[in-house]
Length: 190
Image 1 (cartoon, helix red, strand yellow):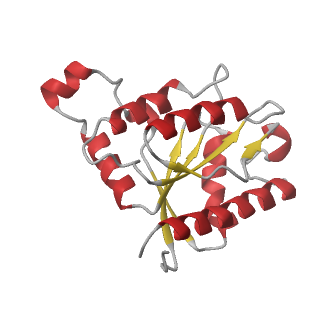
Image 2 (cartoon, helix red, strand yellow):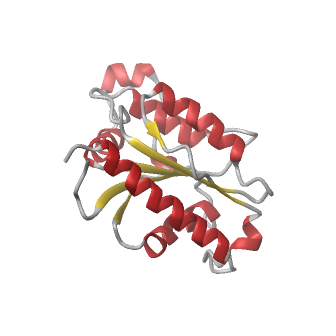
């Protein structure tokens, strides 16, 4: 069991939209968490080249992937916040995970992972979460199953400045983050 007072969490956002509600949720996390989690933003999925085995063979891993893999290995956990595209994981996020999955000393192996989603629809991205869990299972990550956070409809939960203003949603996120911290501490021998 980990006795660290503050846990380092890498955040990955599956959206690249300028006014993304998912990115707004990532920005809100430090104010919601209560201070025992230190959030470190991973790179934008937009900055990761399309996975290509020829590129990997000829040039090795892109520096952005090498740096992300190291960041994930050093972190206590990973939090992925993503919209749902066509009932599934956005292509950019899947591409990033495909690259990281190829790196040596698999960074996601036994790593605690938390999934959140925000959507314009009423079910908040739950189908994406299901597919993302399947990917994480293959990578041998330890995904927190409950409580789940799927915020929707986003336009009713966030204000025009991108602030999460819905009190029940904020409380649900806070409770999930508290559970994730306990989940990490139970699994991490420090």
